[in-house]
Length: 439
Image (cartoon, rainbow, N blue to C red):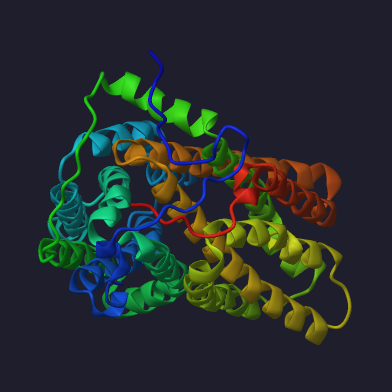
C-alpha cells in the first residue's frame, strides 16, 4: 500500500496542476482583512507581543550588566538561553501542534506563562532576589513558550484567514515583525531611561498579557482534524521526511538555509566593514538599519497586491534573484560619503522589502501546499533548519574575515546567497503560473 500524497504540489512530470474550479459558495469574496474582527485581533496581538519581545532583548542584558555586574561567561549563557529552546524543542513543538484540535488555547497559555516569567524580574529586584541565573531561567521559560506559540500560530492562521487572503495576512504579520525589530531597541532605550532596565522588562509582561486577552476574544471556531499520532519521534521524522522529499518544500528549505547562513556570515562582519572600511559614521548606521524596516512595510504592501495577480511562486522566483544585490553593492562600494550613504539607503530599503516578500511567500506556499495534519511539523522543520544555521553562519563569517579580510567575505556572502536561486528556479515553483484555487 502506498502512502497518500502529503502535499498539494506538482504532478509527476514536474508541472503544476491546473487550477480547479471553485464552487458557487467560494465565488463570493470575503470582506477585506481590515474589516474582519478576528484578523484584527490576531494581528494586534502579534504586533504587541513581538514589540514587547524586542524591548526585552535590550532591557534584560542591560539589567544583567548594570545591576548584576554579569561576567562575560554569564552574558554568553544569557544570550544562548534565548535560542536554546528552539534547538531543543523546535521539532517537537511542530508535532505537538499537529496533535491539537484547537491551537488557540495553547497560544493563550504560552502568552500567560511568558507574562508571568517577565513579571518576576522587577518583583525579584524589589525582593532582593534578582540574579543572573534568575534572568537565564526567565529567558529559557519565555523562549520555550515562544517556540510552542509559533508552532501553534502557523496552523491557526488557517482557521482565522480565508485561503485567498492568507498571503496578505502573512505579509502584514511580517511587516509588523520588520518594524518591531528596528523600532523595538529605540523604544527599549526610552523605557530604560524612564523606568530603569528591570522595570522596562515589565513592558514585555504587559505586552504578553495584552496579547493573551486579544487572542481570547477571537471567535472563529477551530475545526482542525489531527492525524493519528504514531509517537513523538515518529511524528517528528514524518515532518522531516515530507520537508526533504517533497520538491517544493525541499526547495524552500534549501533556499532558506542557504540565505540565512550567508546572511548571518555577512551580519557578523557588517558593523566592522561599515565603520572601518567604508567610514560610515556610527550614528548613521542605526538610520540605515531603520530604513530596512521601512522597506519591510513597502514589501508587505507590494507583496499582498502582486500575489493576487501573479501568485506567490512568481514573486518568490524574482525576489530570490534580488537577494544578493545589496550585499554585492556593499562589497563593491567606494567613493565619497554622500554616494555611499545614498546607495546604502536605497539598497537597504529595497532589501528590507525583498526579505518580507520572500518570507511571506515562503510561509504562504508552505501553508498552501501542506495538508492540515502536517502543517505544524513542516513549518517547525523549516524554522528549525533556517534558524539553527544562524549561529554557524555567524561563526563562519567571523573566522573567514580573520584570514581573508572584510571585503572578500562580503563578496563571498553575496555569491553564496545567489546560490539560493538555484533551489527555487530548479523546483516545480518555476512552472507555477499563478495562485492555485482549491475547492
